[in-house]
Length: 501
Image (cartoon, rainbow, N blue to C red; front, top):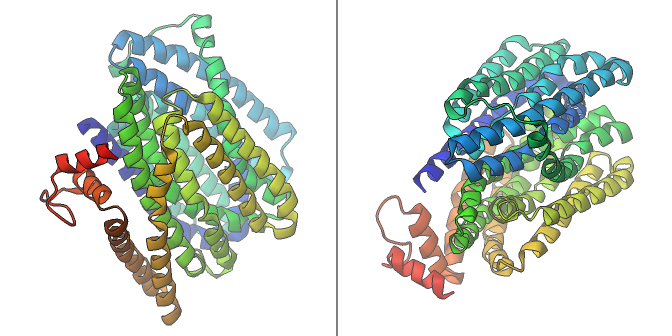
């Protein structure tokens, strides 16, 4: 448990850092590059992303899981790593060749240069072995190196991107950042594995499960990335600029859940191999309720501040992005739920079929809604499609887990935060209505929301489920003292109350 906590701290710290850096650079870049420049970068990145994931396939989950299962045996780790990586290298070279063919024979002439500048990004997929370190639960190494390179890229952006004409420079900086982050991961490979040249069939055996796990990744990309391509094709590059900056905020919020999922998955996979089913269920329940507390709060928080936040943060021309932020915030709760369920049940227990079906169904719904609503509502139509996709995936994944896990109890324990969230949103909205718009007012509103929501949540839990509150406090938050919020129950007593439930 100690290593798990440290890994969670490292990975969450990195995610928080990237969020902070985004907050620091986004206002500057959105004003310098403008709506159209933002839209162009978003569109080109979205297209290049498909060549990237064609290389990575399902390695984020599959490679992580495969290494986690054998990480206590160096010989098995070496054999597993090299057999998987040679598959990745072969497919990556094919994907890179396809990207070059796309650039010179298919891409629109006015975007060709930008695609060329993003070649390092596609190459980074060929050498990306994050999955290896995640499987080893070695998050310190990847976090430190990625942090240093990210900081350098931010400094370069401020130093060299000065006008709209510097969009080319921005592409160079970002493409290089992805490449160097991936390249830096190879510095410690020799420390963890011995070289092993796998036979063709040893690498080939990994292809089928990776292709299966690639299907959900591709499906997710349809409503996380394809949206931006469809907005450009069915509406305009300007609408894509609005959507990009709205999606950026919601996506950064969702990194909290993805960080927890990434850290938890190898540990839970290892626990599955040891047959610790009851411990996994208890951990899943706890993590889900904490995630729902965060998710509901973030959703209502963005609904309250979205319209005020966007023009202050991105500039006056991004007013529409504020409305999109409010609408997109709905997906936070559904995405957070799925992230926990995926990392602590579906992937560790290899329920790949249910996972694939849920995401393919969501992708189909997204394309249908996008095709019908983007021409009418522009970027808002894409939001409708994204919500439809998330709800579809949520329903299918929850139904798939219902046979083994008490999902209804977890839903009730998550729903308890809706009232506190709504009250918090009401307080923040009233404050913004009474005060003049400005950076100081916005910061105060965010601080007020962050302060009152936990209070409302604790008061609600004390009324509705005091024993559960005592257990969570003692289990995860009792850093000073051993007393609960409302009594003298010990941790053992709190646990006993949980078991009786």
